Image (cartoon, rainbow, N blue to C red; front, top):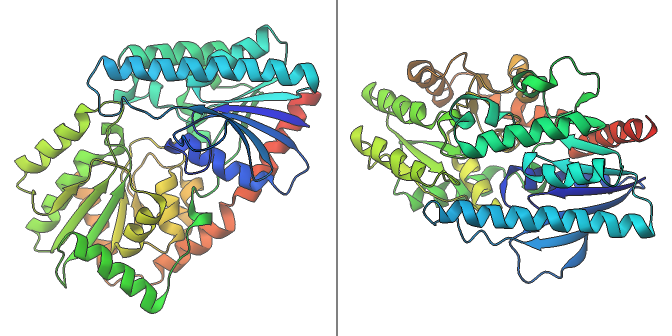
Amino acid sequence: MRIVMVATGSPPAPFGGVGVYIEGLLGGMEAHSTDVHLVGASRHRGLPRVYRHGGATVRRVLATLPWVRAPLPRSRLGMAVALARLNITGAWYVRRLHARKKVDLVAVHDWMCAPVGLVCALLFRLPVCYHVHSAEIFHGDGSRGAVAALGRTLSRALARHARLIMAPSSATVAAVPHLAGRSDVAVVSHGSGRAWQMECPHGAERAAVRDKVRSLYGIPDGRRLVMFAGRYAAIKGVTQLVEAVRRILDDGVDVTLVMAGTGWPETSLDRRLRERVARLGLGERVHVLGRYLDPDELRDHLVAADACAFPSEYESCGFAALEAMALRARTVVGPGFDEAVVGSTEGACLRTATTDPGELASALLRLLGDDDPDLGDRARRYVLGRRTWARAATRTLEAYARAVRR
């Protein structure tokens, strides 16, 4: 079977959650005799235009994201140009490859690559799988604005013409109105983000990592460290997390919160989050980094944390939470996480029923206490046993094969 994927991220060290998914999935597919081609955006100028990664052929489309720090509307224009280049290159690559070697299926990842999926389905008459990675454009604040409206239009259009639709969880399917009740939707859970690349330290090495990270923020002995990593969007529960830290401090527990990430593409979210921290008088206790951490940095921060918090109202999968759990971090997640994904019913993490700051503060206090010392070990066993990319790749390829035969 010959597959062409089109995605907004490509390895190595891809940008964004879709890129992390692609990197993990390609790793899981190496054990299968499948001819995989990827057309993906990349920020690495030094790579050749076409190269091999694992068992896949990658056609790189340069996207250095120069608009990340740019104000609107320049950031929107830059993103639109990059996506147009990606979709045009994807359609061209599929057409050229299909003329030489038959393409069995085109896998389109997220609505931003929907145009190439529509071209392949309607003009080239090829089977298309539409991967719906998130329902955020249909949910809460993420559903507002022209970009979200465009995303919903493209998503509905491609869903009508795709032979197969794939989602990471039943919660994502339920959150997308035009997917309800369809027989061509397959739910295949993701693997555990970059956890398969992250070595989990033990003993003295773990203590050294902890000391190194704490020294970066001047955290004295006895003070607890809470870690968050993700986008600074309202749907991620970042405001509630900051308010929960205020309550924990008011209860007399000494704690520091480090928030890795950014609000991009809504760059104003960084400023608004810092303003909220200042209003609550937490300038010395909450560190809003305003950038994503490199994989090694992220690993060290998750290892050093006394507790990790991801209080999302909606989450399609939540790689950062799974990575934290794989590193034995004591983790609390919000109600937006699918219980079947994070294993909260099996004791792998704590999951709050709401995003209320009081409930979140209570959950964090449980993690910061001495109760349930085996929680981190259970979390690691759950992720390594149930959220592997090998398993995700096998189930994905099985769904592809059924769609091709249909």
